View 1 (tube, rainbow, N blue to C red):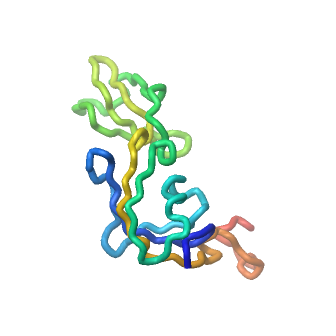
View 2 (spheres, helix red, strand yellow):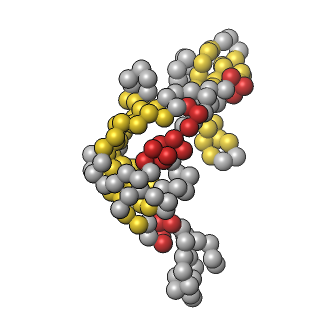
Length: 166
């Protein structure tokens, strides 16, 4: 089967950036799996995976515009140093997490001043060209469970936990 809309796809991969630094990789025997075409992957990677089959390997580069976007300076914020853990050594390059309305937000420390800390709220890979060295480990039809749908049999006399029909 070829990678297409609503296919279950599993990838073994190593992700690097232009500097050659490895920023992510799948663990041996634990490929990254997702349902193709459902917005779970960055658009540039999905576009280049379309039509590939199990066992195929590829080196795929994805520009920032098709990944996490360009780095946006308007997402730099000066935060009072008092808002950080008391007594902690704060240095450029550190990453802290803040809680936003939709979960955790990573804050990359850009600059530390006497009373403020300049943080970058962009995605950590914003502005980066991503380089994937990958193998398609599996391609198959996704199950109803994996697609998040349900059929009438599943929604009979009990609650579905994956489709919200009750």
